[in-house]
Each structure stands twice: as C-alpha cells, then as structure tokens.
Length: 349
Ligand code: P6P
Image (cartoon, rainbow, N blue to C red; front, side):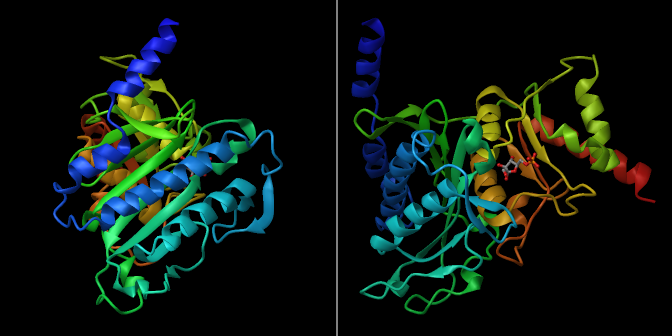
C-alpha cells in the first residue's frame, strides 16, 4: 500500500509533459506553437511504440522483417513498425516539411493538404536504436533531432535542410524503452526527463534538469573490438583499467546508445564508439544519433566530440554519414583528448 500511495502522490504531484511544454513554450525564441506540437506528436508516437515494444515477446512482431535497410542491417519488425508510427504521426499533423530516418534511404518531403511546404521544421530520427537487443529483452530507444528549415518556406524541402551542423538544432531528445519508458529532451534550456505511467498513458516530470557529473567512473566501449582500435584508444582503455587514483573505472556497455548514455548521464561516465580498422569512420550516424545525443549531453554539462572536434560543429555532407563518437562527463572526455594528443605526438609520424 505504501508503494501505491507513493506512486499515487508521485504522479499526482509531478507535472505532466503536456503542462511542462505549455509552461516552457514562451521560453523558446521561436514560440509559435509548432515546436510544441512536434514534441506532442513525438510523445504520442512514443506511447504507441512503448506499448508494442513491451508486448514484443508476446506478439509475432519480433525478428527480422526480411528487408535490409541502407545500413545493410536486417530490419527488425519493430524497427519498421516504430519508423512508420513516428513518420505517420508527424505527417498526419502537418507540422513538419520534411523527415529523415535511419530506416529510409532518402528524406521524405511532406506533402500535406494545405501544402506542408509552409511548415518551418524538419525532423531527423533513429526510430528504434539498438534494435538488435529486442530479441533478448534489453532496452532500446528512439532518437530525434529538430531543425528549422533553411530553404525558403513554401518550397519543397531539400537535402540542404537536413545537412545542418548540430549547433543549429532547436530541439533533440530520446525515448528509452527500458524498465520504464522515459522521454528525455532539450530545446536548449537544459535537459528534462519524463517517465510514462502506462496505466493512464501520461508522461510525468521525473528527472528535472538532468546533469552529467564532471567526473565519473564508468567507461562504455565495445572492448571486443580492442585489437582494431587506434593506439590512442587502446592506451585510454588501459588508463581506465589502471589501479591508480579513482581507477580502475567500471566497464558498462549495453550495446544500445540511448541506454548507455542515459545511464552515464545519471551516474557519470564516458561512452566511446571510435574509428577502427573494421569501421574507419566509426559506426554511429552523425545526423540522427550523434548530433541529438550531443545536444543533450552538452545541455546536461557534458562534452561530445569525434575525438578531435566538437560533434555539433561538424558540417554534414551526407544523410547517413558516420562519425567517431566520444561523449559524457566533461573531465573524462577531456582526459580522452589527452590520449589523442599523446597518440598524435607518439604515433602520427
Ligand atoms: P556494437 C546499435 O546498433 C548501435 O547503433 C548503438 O545503439 C550502440 O551503441 C552500437 O550500435 C553498438 O554497436 O558494434 O558495439 O554492437
């Protein structure tokens, strides 16, 4: 009963996502209501996908859909389902002029009844990140990024509207389908996390003003690729494992970007997906994985780089381009930089 009472008071006393959006709309410099409607649209799609993800084991929608996406990965049925839900929810509300997704080779020009070309925003997303974890009941996530278009309003959206540096993002966030479903997002005024109460289908503010600690003791990297890493990354991993000061760190790696970064934001840590001889440009996608996660990480006081440059200042050249990704607690990412400098000094000749 105590648990039920605590739960009752938590959900009654905490602000809902809808209330939060309304209260903060005016803080947003372009507060025309369209961005709020985009977040609301993502909120609705997240509830629908959460319901399916949490039923995946019971209904025959787990397992490859038999098609392969541009990444060369088998499309899991939930990938396809989540992609369709997020795209249709945005298109039906005619609030964006274009959409790009990891699951679609090209971007989508939204043609609405009243010509959606008049809408100001484009959305880029990874509809179900970490989908290889679905079959083994490990948490997965959705990642989204929102930009104002840069081509003239009233004209069809172009690739240029999507190939913007991350510093132009007006909003970014993720949904994590874990032990609970959370929506975490920023519009440039800090990071706030909302937990879904599935019993009534409402997101409540559960993690206000999320912040990375400057230091942490978790490093997240797929050490199975160790022999393929650059020497600077190998040296840093050995640094993490040294018995010295606050080390050795703890290694935690779920293999789901949203889950690994969400845990590190709460507990302190660094996530690394570097270049390797197997992935010369890294694995993660700049536009709909690294840029949105970097916006959140920076807004939470952390740092995000490709090992040498700030991720959000990189100028994209392709919709599905990959970049190396180092992000998390400020001092841990800076320390990682030192290993790059040593690596360059020592090995680049
Ligand atoms: P690896 C999932 O496929 C993903 O894109 C990220 O969510 C995750 O962090 C990474 O790839 C895992 O990749 O090569 O370690 O399995």
